[in-house]
Length: 128
Image 1 (cartoon, rainbow, N blue to C red):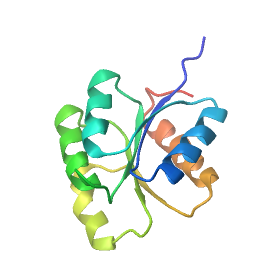
Image 2 (cartoon, helix red, strand yellow; image 1 turned 180 degrees about the horizontal axis):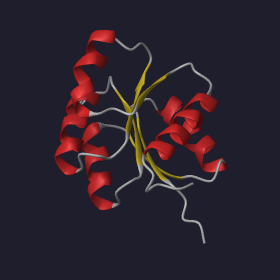
Image 3 (cartoon, rainbow, N blue to C red; image 1 turned 90 degrees about the horizontal axis):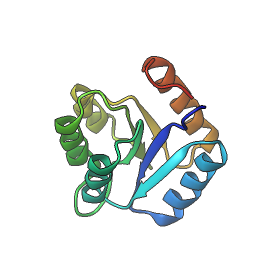
């Protein structure tokens, strides 16, 4: 029996989060969503995902602060940053926190799937 890979999709924009989560579900992934950093941390503590898609620009707690707190919980949990426009300086500042990739809003969801598959190969303990 294959256990589906658990994805946590964190984005404050429902019109992005919901369709992307649905699309991943149609590909066989187990997807949980959170609309901000605080809810993301609650979700990670309640039911640790295999991969996190994390928006950079969110109210309450931005993606960078959320990433720092995720690293306090789990140093190796794969985190893919979601951004409409990634500021290269901000991405560089995040590198010490071991991000697994960047998904640009406006990209085809297939690119997100490709990122997941790359991360799964990198983190051998995760199997699709």
